[in-house]
Length: 256
Image (cartoon, helix red, strand yellow):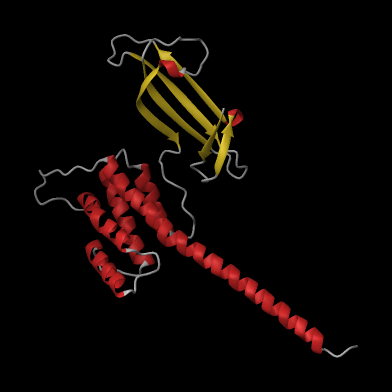
């Protein structure tokens, strides 16, 4: 087989073939359980990047539409037996976080990675970390610190209206931060009446995580790429200027 795949460890896109890919699984023979015919499969994918070489490992607990053959050796369960995935678990890496470049400040990356890692196990905590990461980005990238996220969003919106916001900050991104900040507030601040429980689901925590990924791209990565391109142009201009000066010196230099 061959299929496109992006390594979750090094973010290198690649085509994986059979030597880099393997599946093992089997059907279970169990009585007195509520799922009917069941089985499992474990999938392993090895990164072909020689600088990485990591292995992605995941498992699926499967509902089968008919009894699958149970063999002594581990074997892939054919598609015609699979009805649905009851539960899926990724063992390596444990979260769905994307590799973030080192030019993004380490505290922001750490909050992002931790929020991704606990999104399913503790959505409230993940939302709180994501909220802190968003606040950290406003303080670091935009240079605004007002003590509260709400105050910082208002200050950023004012700068945007005045045309003084950093490059890459848009009205849509500020609106998005303002719209989702209450999700993180649920985890960060307890209601006065402790019997009032406002739940945060994995999907809501994921909304904050995806906003962080978007702002990492639009703010930090775009700024870094722009600076790198300008630096390259300036370096070329400086090199050509030096070459021109050297050529002129050769023309006016007296013969020896």
